[in-house]
Length: 385
Ligand SMILES: Cc1cc2nc3c(=O)[nH]c(=O)nc-3n(C[C@H](O)[C@H](O)[C@H](O)COP(=O)(O)OP(=O)(O)OC[C@H]3O[C@@H](n4cnc5c(N)ncnc54)[C@H](O)[C@@H]3O)c2cc1C
Image (cartoon, rainbow, N blue to C red):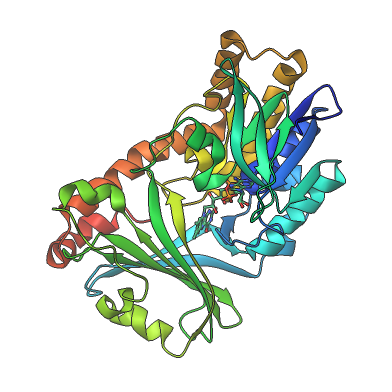
């Protein structure tokens, strides 16, 4: 049966990822009653990013020492290999990469959010949004594997469900050139260098270009990532096979050696929105979207944890007054959008999407041959930080 939540100013947040939890915290701190719905049985089960830079702003919203507590390894060096591995460049970065455990990191954020009085229900999947005369009034949810639907009404729905976000489906967002396939693997028994992130560029003409990464995690563990740059596909005569993570070592001997004798203990084949920022924050009155749902990943380094959390927090805070007034009129939406676009995180995302997104697409389209890549390495390496 349809159910109206008790409080007069309510918000329902879809997804307990960085965007959803940031949003819930921002809303609650502005006095809005919030319910978060998460389809996984436990927070943080499906591991996504595990490399982050220290953010004073994010730590300030959580608690002192949050980043230190969750850091399992620290790295400030990077090495980039050309496809042939004949060329490489080493870089040292000023703000080190902190390696975290996604599950503990996300569960801890959820604990902070719960302690502030937010209700988080896990094992509940949102299946659709309820729209009435152009206004989002709530959503339909169910326990995965059951057919019993529950309707939940709210003053505003915050859709923060990541790459297969219900809000994104509701407004039919075209994500073909935004979301890239990404394979993740966590391994044990890693004996390669522990003090640098390694990137292997892949431009073999027979397959979609990509980047293979090895991110050490300390104690003989490492994260292996293969990112396929499908937005370069326009330069190929389709169909071009997608390279699988198992095939990557065949092309890259050093990468292969690093993996020798290791044991895989986690895998996740998914998508990451690294092709630019999509849509506006409030595409329909009563609906606000944040995080991977809108492509809020920095295309320069693939960081989306911090940006999603901070943008979520801002979206929550800024929309609180609109929720209280119950007025999602065009003027209010316009004002909300303007403020969100002025957010420093948003400006950075847009700038990087334009500069680095375009540069990367053009480079991988033009230098799509290993010899060409080596020939142009001097120029190419200047773009790597
Ligand atoms: C393999 C990989 C590696 C990455 N590496 C990094 C990195 O090193 N550093 C970094 O900063 N970023 C990284 N990212 C990006 C970063 O993880 C994301 O940008 C960030 O997690 C986005 O947060 P989000 O809350 O928008 O989405 P998500 O983290 O995907 O959270 C969405 C949540 O919504 C839930 N959900 C979805 N649909 C529904 C539904 N219908 N009903 C209920 N719940 C639902 C999901 O279960 C999930 O918990 C990586 C991403 C991937 C995939």
